[in-house]
Image 1 (cartoon, rainbow, N blue to C red):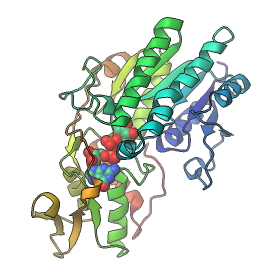
Image 2 (tube, rainbow, N blue to C red):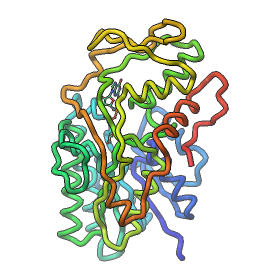
Image 3 (cartoon, rainbow, N blue to C red):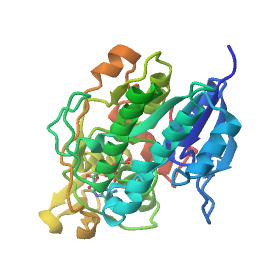
Image 4 (cartoon, rainbow, N blue to C red):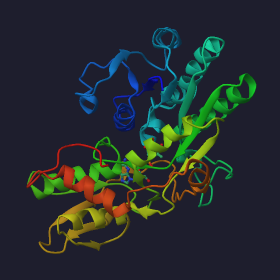
Length: 344
Ligand code: F7E
């Protein structure tokens, strides 16, 4: 079989790095598009046999030229303004990158359609479900409650529009939260595991967090990027939810993560005055920072991935316990044996 060529936008993020490794293992030529950054941002893809190109989903001309140059078989659009809380402060940028960005790629594909069929994956998000009651599946009506969720929902509909109107092979992967040791430190799971490593090493005393009672369906990025690849191997484009079907609160994540280093938490106080105390030492290790609460919050996400299980034969291989343990172990400074790498 001829070697395939893939283009990954957002290759410098967690998902881009994990997907690049998966595609290299499958013998793809992997090209990555990355935006200009004044500070080094390629640590996650260091040493991988890939070709990096400057480009940005806000620059339609750059995208078209890139597609004409590398003529990919598959495009994975992982570029995005991915932080939900930040999207409240930058709604226009969020809409431009997450909402219009995919359209610039789809337009370029439309222009090239006569020359070559290109398959397109859009990183849609469980954040589009917002306040819709759990469990959420492909049939659930969307109710986004953040600028991020609304921007992703616009892109979701435009993917379907290009698929139906112009016959493009374009699919939406509606992915619930997915994490790994490569997760950005601004997301709650990695923020917690990074802090645990530092607290254990005596480099800090505590971690400040926002809403501890929000529940998320947390899976492993490696499982989810494998699912993204599987979507583009289908003859017909479609939309799929990827999720574990189980949800845990931030508080549950904290308890499991601290337990990995042998620390039990006792909760004292309530609301903004709540504290997490190290049961063994009596020291405060968790406190609440009101600035970390969002103007509107999603309280509970639980995905129903039956369609992906049935049609893609996809099933998550990592349990919540595996995920938490892997992330904490990777961030341990004391007796840290694990290099920063996603699990297999
Ligand atoms: O927040 C709560 C916060 O920022 C998870 C992105 O990949 O998944 C991710 O979005 C929960 C929220 O992820 C802190 O309020 C408490 O309820 O890790 P997160 P997210 O917003 O769910 C979806 C599927 C995406 O598509 C997004 O791109 O944790 N929380 N305290 C906190 N969150 C953060 N970040 N920091 C805190 O201190």
